[in-house]
Image 1 (cartoon, rainbow, N blue to C red):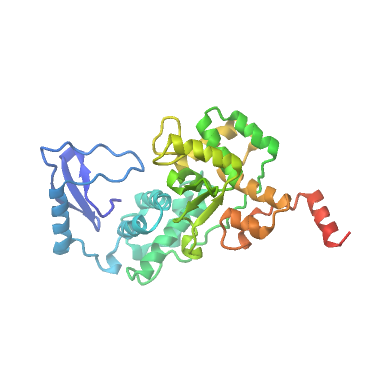
Image 2 (cartoon, rainbow, N blue to C red):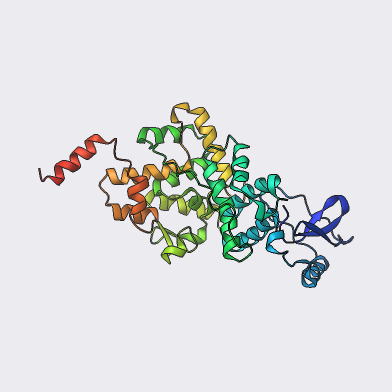
Length: 355
């Protein structure tokens, strides 16, 4: 599945663009320029030379880039068009998530006409990946999102996978005790990742927020991290504000001195900071070392922060604000894991009765 921009084929030392399943030749790579390096997974595509870009625009203007009729649109073309849209309008993490699932889906059904796509195809694709488990829901969301978008944009007259049912979101009830948090900190060998985990525990921030915070987001005077672009920006119309404890203010100050540009939290040999996959792998390794902490993932720190705040008597509205939620419903549904806190609930009942 090729995106709709020029790409380099090393075996021919030439540039192409793929449109509606057909590869259009744009020209050989200029002899006076070194060829592009081979991309690593997740890297952006190389920028083509000026003459190749000119050829690309000429091909597109000639009509080669026109879409085929709706009944002739293959699945791969619909996915390509959606990814073009996603790259411009979604966060890099969201775009990469869509791309990984859709690339895999198109390896099975990319040449199939979109009009012939059935829910059964999605089911068979999912069954081909029995190890996905928790990723199954996200895979369905990615595919349905593509065809909802295509219908809304007028590319298709209907969404062929509209009736595919996504499984309910799993609620992770695993909450860390203070002793378990200390055990995790003691098990992590390198200081940089220990600081990353400490930041999640201390702020309740989303792992993605900790991954991408830079010096530009930090206000040391007020003790805040401020994100103008964030997950709920469109719904709230407000920046995401993360409130820092004194320990986090000092850690932020230290990291800003070490990394005035780019992510504050990064591995000892990395300039780009942690990726979602690298954090996932680190927690997988932690679970392997500490088998009794089965089910602990990076988001467990956030769940534990919210639950502990409620247990400590912080109001639900304040917890919602600390977590960056639009209202209190998410806290009530997903973070108030208090059913097993018998003593806490008995005390709440005593207060409610005026005893």
